[in-house]
Length: 496
Image (cartoon, one colour):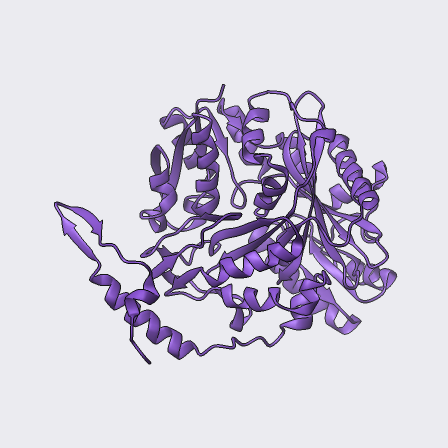
């Protein structure tokens, strides 16, 4: 059995992985950079190891340093989380070559699915439906222009080597194409080290629906139902839910079987997600495979009761799946909101800085996978995700109400977050009726402004911060907290 795992990541996902490791009696090692010397994930682990300067290339993306950290601390396995090196085939190879267990798919599988055009070719051969588009990536503009004309505008430019919205552009006419291709290629080269792009037909108002899979090394593969991920900004998800309001049982089974077929085609092992686009006629098309744990995995865990990280570890330890497809069922409804340090008034631009005060929501059916605390500086160098707030209730309507309640009780001051934006989004008629498409934010919130006064809120936060300073005292180098009910009780009769 695996005894010690190094988590090659940071923040909330590192802490989430550690929680399961500790439940299983597995020791953990965290890694940290200069920017993360005071990060929560460093102190959550049994051991922490410094790996370099704040720049990702000198720390969390440095394969040699991470392998060295694992060897030095006698870790026998590495969990990559998501982002950074999670879908890097060279990193998976390096782990194996160093005698370490890589908790994820085999390197050759990561490599195949890492190139979107190769993945499309594989799916075409196996009969999984794909969006009409180029089968090979290109850097030659003339060939890209020919393809755009063939599939007719609007078309979608995509990076062949990555995902997460990087290197992606919608082009509505021929005169926009060259500039869009150049921008997409530069962005892809910067993000993935590969500027190759390709073109596919743009599907208007699709839904983004993904299927979670688990596959062991014995040939057993199951899916853990679907997640609806259509609420996106800049082609990146911010709100997810399960089950999808668009799927009936027959469509759910068809998509689940297509996901399993996609995994079997390449000998997939461990956890993964097969992503599809669903058009308005309920035709679904293969989009990509994420060969890692997904940010939105908590909602699947909430409705199925299955700990995906636990199964990642067991499968990496060469243990067989003990659950079959008939054992998988969903109960109730779950919603996740990604809480970032970002400004929804400014196109969701990152908002790093010091969190002066934070109070997390709690209660039945509320789960908050969090990686920060009051006083922590959200660094500018990394993705500014703070936490994944998820709720679970008997019905979708109750889940929406519970999420609005949870968001309303989530206090984060010092930086900007999309909390209030999400409350307003969840309250819209369109969302409540399940009319969620990938252009939802563009259609309903293109020029969003908050309904409250920022100046008044800032003054209240300042007063609260000043008052809270008096609620701490130092005794023999130990920080002690004096009792108080909450910020608003502490404010008492203050008025702006």
